Every structure is written in structure tokens, then in C-alpha cells.
Image 1: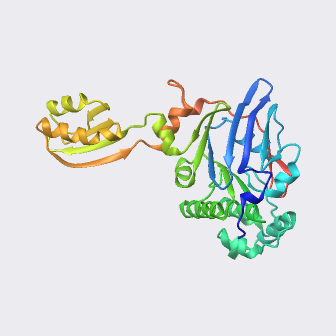
Image 2 (image 1 turned 135 degrees about the vertical axis):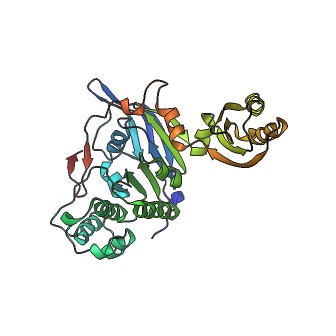
Image 3 (image 1 turned 135 degrees about the horizontal axis):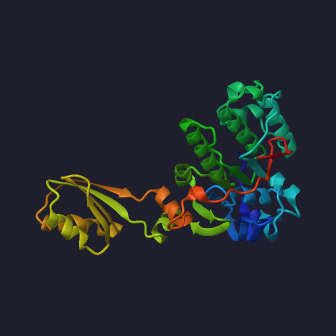
Length: 340
């Protein structure tokens, strides 16, 4: 694979994707509301949000399948609407909604993708890389959903693109397939490519992303590393203590500590304490000082799901109640437009 050198590209200035005041209105529905975002070259950027948050609309605008109501989007310095052909030539895409030609083999799909990029890739090597090399001469109509996902990824990799845009890349993949997908994403980043992907599978995001952006109701509510976002919402740790006996004195002593936000007894011998990470040692000292004996302990981080919920839900509103995005055109594997 070729190595990319951002310093040789005067257009990008180290920026792979830039959104400035991006808005999209469908009648009375606001899909995007003045979204501004910069994605650096050579990073893996996760684009998160509940259904209807605006993720697919953003990707459709980057690929010029949807025109924004206001604002601009650039990819490698090219305006996504004015220079859409240049953008598509530099970008590899795995869309969430796509169409494969049932009568064509995997090899024929790859040959088409390679020709469209003017590259000299070997179709067999790309198919081997995504784990379906032994199906090269089978027709795509007989593929499982996971095999189709792998084939479209292979097509996206044709031409060693400078930017990969992946919309829900783990869809249809089993755990091994998801792990292989993550390995490919990391390898592309190590090559120097930028990977921009949307996903609702938070474990996948946490495993590979350098930074993430979170959309809510069409607005960008947070951009940072996952660790920094946890810190920003005050994501405490859970300390699970096994003690000889959970007494009232032990409960009172731990509850009184600064930095402790919740204490409850899970059983007669197990105490669960939610506290700031730096407070955990003080918790164990307090238990001992109150006459308790700690026989074991385990520190649990607040889950990514809980952190995500803090950014994407109201106090009394679940993510499932968010309105869905309007249907929009998404690219097919053959370059046509299909409806999601």
C-alpha cells in the first residue's frame, strides 16, 4: 500500500474533512443545524448519534448525494458540491444502503471499482484482504449480508483512497468479521489515510477511534477523545468492594466522603460505590476505619453507553424517541443512487 504524505498536498493543509455551518432542512424537519467540524488527516474519526441525528445526511452531503440548505463541506480541500468528482476520486465509500449486481461476481465488482479509480490493484488481493478471496468468482446474488459488506469494503479500498467514509461498517458482520474490519481500519490509518465512519455499535467506536463527534437532533454536541468526553460529563467510576459484612457504620462512613455520589449494598458482603476515580483509595480506608474488612475489590469504568446517553438524551427523553431522518439518496456500489 502506498504511504500518504499530507505535507505534499497543498489543498488539504492537514485537514481531511471540514464542515462549516452545515445545515439541511427537509420542509419543517431540520436534519442538520449549523454543524461545524474539522477532521484531521490520518485520524480515525467516529461519527455518533441516535437514529435520526443527522449522520447519514452529513455523509450524503460529503458525497454530494444531498445538497445542504446552508453552509459548506470540503474533503481534502475540495468543495463537496462544486468539486464532487474530485472528492469521489479521492474517497473510498462503504455506504449503509448499497446495491450490488446479483449477476456479477465479486471479481467483476472489484474490476469495475478499480477501473473507476484508474488504479492497478489486484482484485484477488483486495478480496483476500477482506476475507472473501475464495468467493472471487461467485455471483454476489448468493452472498450473505456479511459477505456483501466485505465486498463493498474491498471496493472502497480500491485505489488506496486518501479518505475512507464508512457508514455503519460492521453491519452484518459476526464478531470475527467486526474484528477484521477494525484491523483494516487501523491499517488504513497507519498507511496515512483518514477514516471517517458512523456507527451505533459503541464498542467498535471505542476500539478504534482517535476522536469522536456526537450528533443530537442535527446538532454537534461534543467532539473529543472518548476519555475526554467521559471526563467532561463527570463520568465516575464504580468501585465494587467485597467485605466481611456491610454494616450501617460502613455505609455511613463511605457516604460521607467527598467525591462519592452513590453507595448501596448489593448484598450482605458486597458494597457498590460510585465515586471520582481519585476517591477509590479513600473509600477503602473509610471502610477499614469504620470496622469493616475489605477482602476483594474491582474497579468498573462507567460504560460508553452511559457516557453516550449523557450527551444524547434529555433527562426525561430516551434516545428511541428521537425523530427519524427523512429518506435520502445513498450511493450504490455501482455509482447509482438508491433509496435507503
